[in-house]
Image 1 (cartoon, rainbow, N blue to C red):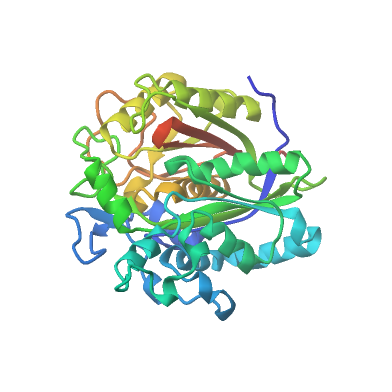
Image 2 (image 1 turned 60 degrees about the horizontal axis):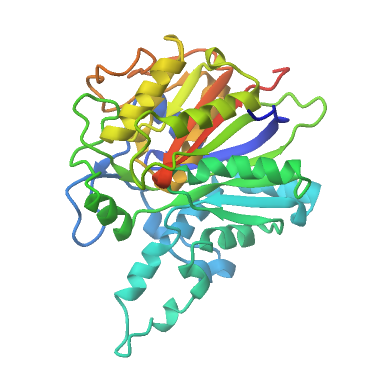
Length: 401
């Protein structure tokens, strides 16, 4: 069992998704159970499903100095970086620590593959990309991190984590290690993933996509609704006398080593990640006030996670899935749902599970359909990805807050 870690201060954070840009838009949607899902209108031949699409993304323009990085994924990252004073917070950290002492750890599952799809539709008679698509760096999984590092003007260690739907949850764990080992004084963490043909048709081929808005943990759930999102957080060491909230208290990472796309039937990897996150935070399950569940609305994921929460947490714990608000944003899901937990701690807002009508009888009383308000001292976020990649994060209020 891992030892407790020194908490990290989350000095700035933000999210952009189908429910809007920035913290206020997300808090308002969560408080009023307002879903951002809509009938699929993405692409020339849309699948009959529902998606969480970010409005106006096609009109976003990158700074002239960064136009060589233009693609849907980097435009979404740029839009997200400008919300909630995040650019200013990073600039202040850069002045404080120096550009080489700020790490960057981002998660994504497809990066800019949508731009590569477009390039392949534009091949010339010799089978080559057109001149404006001959940008090798854009067509790589590390495109997002290279772009963000340039626009933020930071030059510390830079990582891209791509473990499917746990990608931008695991960024917090990697950042904690970089800071604890003295390789950085602060880290920008987060992720971005955008809708593209590979995502929509790929998940449809796996028979995971619902023809209606997703209904997490519903007895009649029919699968997932895909979405796109970006989110970022700035993490730093806690300074003496620093009582600002919130904090990263713990994390756990584990692998099922069971199946490429199906979780272990008894949730062994998910429970190991949970146990490690609680141990690093020095907390018992009873201390957790709110759980943001992975809750994709797929048959097996919900079945395994619902059983895990039912057997490990007391009935008064408030648990919900927010996939019905913004869809499953894949590599960006971890950071967006971390932001939901941070909002819960700061504002005492615990969201419900939108679109769900009748909970499956196999799940516990922890699952809630309606939002409530109340003090949230500690919040847990679950993220589970293909290949059995599991990550659990624990956030909390500062000790003196």
